[in-house]
Length: 102
Image (tube, rainbow, N blue to C red; front, side, top):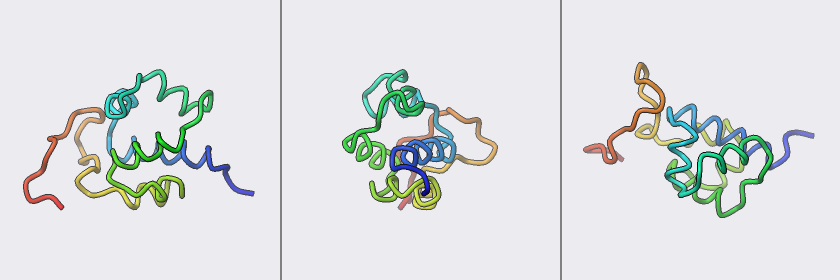
């Protein structure tokens, strides 16, 4: 048997954080929760609820089913505009809107 659904979501969130060059603090701010709450969910102490999953997916511009499918599908679905620019330090804010973006 493969990963549990909870493990898949945690892996997908970790992969999205990395791909987007975001910190847990930035994700927490976007979700309106504390960094500690994100940390607990990522360590498995607390679970990501379905409502959380919808919020995370919306934040990254992907479908919630792609998040639930795990890290590969989630990161493949991540829009180019949300991806970390190579050479840009992780955790730096990107502009809210990109001209001509899709």
